[in-house]
Length: 201
Image (cartoon, rainbow, N blue to C red; front, top):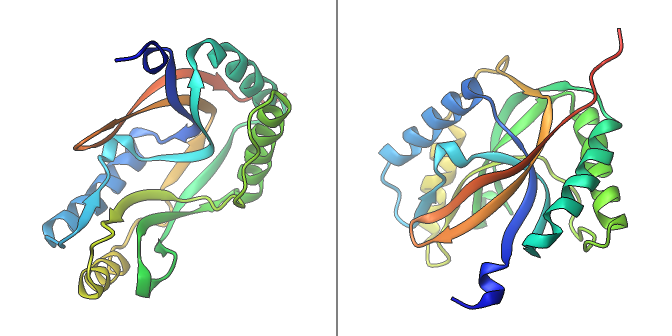
C-alpha cells in the first residue's frame, strides 16, 4: 500500500438514518433479496444513507477543514423531519441501474441544508457538484451485464414494495463518512458528526 493510499480516504457528507427507518429499509431490501434477481447487488441495510455531497478522495489532513465547513453549514439550519417515500429507479424503468427509496416531508428544509453544505465546501476549495440534488436512498444497483428481463424483474419487485408513509426520518445532524470499497460492496464509517443548530424557543 502506497503512502498516498494510506493518507487519503474516499469521503462524502450524508444524513444518517435512525434505527426505525433503517428497519423498514432493511425489510424492503430483504424482500428484493428473496426475489433472487440476477445481476442485482443490494446495499447493506446498515449502510443506507442520504448523500448530501460526494467529496471523492481527500487527504486525511483535510478532514478538519471539511468538518469546519460542515459546522458552518449546520449552524444555519435547525432540525427537521423527512418521511420515507415511494421507490424508484435511475435513469428509468427500461434501463434501471440504481434502485432507490424516495423521501417526502420537509423537502424544502432538506434542499436548503444540502445547498448550504455545497456552498461552504465549495468555498473551502472542494469541487462543485455537477449534478442537481435529487434526494434518495440507494438500496440496490444493477450490474452492467444485467439483461432487460433482469431490469424488468427488479423494477417490478421494487414497485410492489410498500413502506409506511408516516415513518419519520428525523434530521438532527450531518456526518462526514468514509467509504471503503470491498469486493462484497462498500463499507461506510462515520468520521465526524455535526449537529444542526438547536431551535430557539
